[in-house]
Image (cartoon, rainbow, N blue to C red):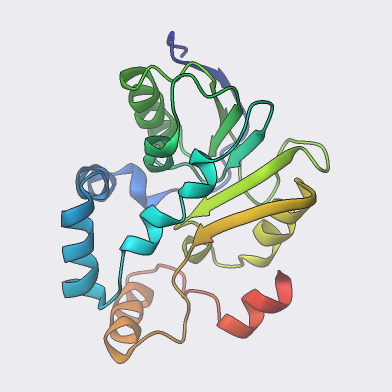
Length: 202
């Protein structure tokens, strides 16, 4: 499926994405509204969600000729930082075709013709070493049972001297966060990575 605002390459979907269902639609709604995301972040998780939006400045300041890799792109939340006239190559990757379809619609609405959509698992990215000047990774690592291969893949695809920007939950969160993680674990979802492990991988 291709639209005027995005091109699509296909890959292998090797694991399900819980955000591709009804939760993902709700998430897409509030993530696009800064004030609502900040409110939910504070009330539910006890976090300052504004860091998500300020970190996207790395996309906004990218100059012509820059290659940006967005993994996992989800519904395309980071596209908000991309300008239609920005001369970058923007590769949005997700394991879920449903999430890619949402990102494609968002790119089309924003007239972002420089966006390429690729279906792939972030633990086995179909790109050569050093492909990207900037890698952005929002809310993906804590969705994996074993995030280490994904971190290694993100680093592999980054050029020497490139920049990696992103957000993830970590296991050593607040008491409230740990209680929510435990509920998720009982529901079959992965436990977020530990801070020390994540730093070691990086």
